[in-house]
Length: 309
Image (cartoon, rainbow, N blue to C red; front, top):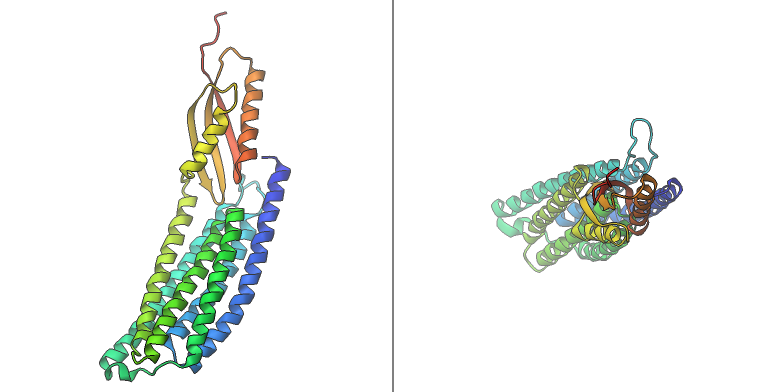
């Protein structure tokens, strides 16, 4: 990939990520204010927990913005392969925030369950007001829309941090569904369902945090790319008329980029210049046809013995 095209791709990536993140922060600030107000006025523990979860979204989005900005920095003397892995670091921090949020919500909700169970049964808990139910409905619709919006952007630029942020929004939608069920059940005469919903919400949030963490770590430990991409690379290489075979093909994820190392077999009787030109053609074909490949290293092996002198 040429330096100019690589720079253009990085600039486009940062532009999209920043625009998406700014819109998410604006939406979340408004949503947190409404949910917190509804939770307090409506006396709903589940809705207050839901508001806290949305507040963590704002912190998470800020981390994503910082991670994207740092990962998009150009290579320097100390980081000659670039800074893409800093985006994975941002995703790990986001996962930690999400995990802590889920654990906190679970602990608070457990306290509500114990209060209802040991201090006079379900009557010890007040039924939430209708405003809490309205807030849960608004949150479900808003957060699910934000999930699909951020997910689309993440797929466009192949961003781990943005995908983590999308799942952060999806977990908030799940959280609001749990809040809706708990609040509705409490209003129908089962107040204990409100804090029970908070516990279910916390488990969903913790699971999302673990999934985000595992994906980010995988991209920091040179995991190979998926089989479909590997086969696409193999087909492109073998599609060159001068390539007689592949001795070795290895890929590794580096943040949101892919590195490829391949050993191809060429006619051993060819000159060094001819072999170099073929290797360059293969290199250009792979980087041109498969997005997000940062570099493809081609090594040439002779398929036939060199002719006797």
